[in-house]
Amino acid sequence: MKKNYLTSSPSQTQKIGESLAKEILRDGPRKKAYVIGLVGDLGGGKTTFLQGFAKGLRIKDKILSPTFIIMRRFKNFYHVDCYRIQKPEEILDLGLKEIISNPKNIVAIEWADRLQAILPKNTLMLEFEFIDEKTRRIVVR
Ligand code: ADP
Ligand code: MG
Image (tube, rainbow, N blue to C red; front, side, top):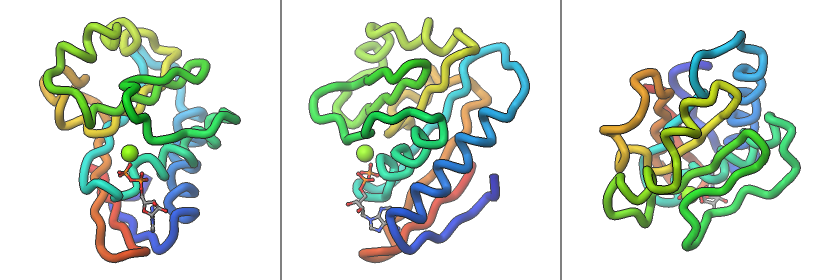
């Protein structure tokens, strides 16, 4: 994955997500789940990115912005959205630690900065920035 992207449409953002997923599928065995953290502006494209990401994982279900649900599971892919959580304990109560300890799992966490203290050190952090109506910057940290 490159370090920096400027995208000018939702579908372009989805394509970037899709190619990251395919890269992950090509990767060799892991000791723990593959975790990506998505941070940055509301409307920055985090959920849009994950729609393409799920497609790249060959998941057919539609990825939506969860309203009250914090975590959704699609086979071995977990979509977590921390927008509404007040403290990390809420998500730990859902069993996130066990999920992360399973190398078969792939976990994508929106608003991952709210869980900073409990994220694995090697979490791939993606930062989404709203530039204008159609333009978003994605930076890999
Ligand atoms: P987040 O999950 O970061 O809050 P969403 O993906 O839910 O953001 O929303 C992004 C919104 O911005 C969507 O309505 C999408 O159609 C729109 N959009 C416009 N241009 C882009 C782009 N280049 N990349 C991603 N989303 C875009
Ligand atoms: Mg979102």
